[in-house]
Image (cartoon, rainbow, N blue to C red; front, side, top):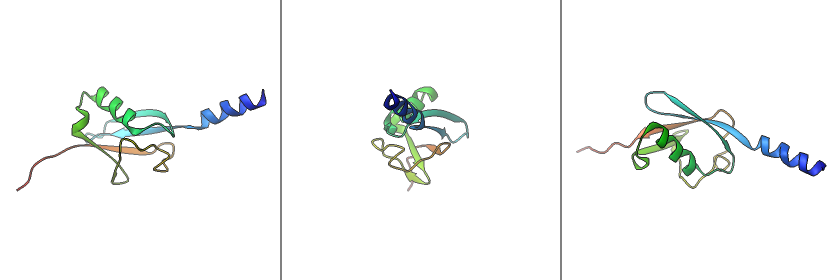
Length: 92
C-alpha cells in the first residue's frame, strides 16, 4: 500500500510545465512528463496554431530540438520556454 502511494507521488513530480512561444510572443502551455518525446508537443502546438509541422523549428536555449528528444534529455525544468520559429528559405 505504501509503495502505491510512493508511485503516485513520483508521477505527480514527473510532470513539468513548458511554454512554447512563437514569433508573435504568444504562448501555448503544456504539462508533460519528463519522458514525453518532443514530437508529441510539436504536433500539438502546430495543430493548435494551424501550422504545418515541417515549416516550424523549435529551439531551447538557442539549440534546435530533435523530435525524438525528451525534456529529461535537455535537463529542462518546470517553467522553461521553447521558441518556435518559422523556417525561412531564401538568400543569394
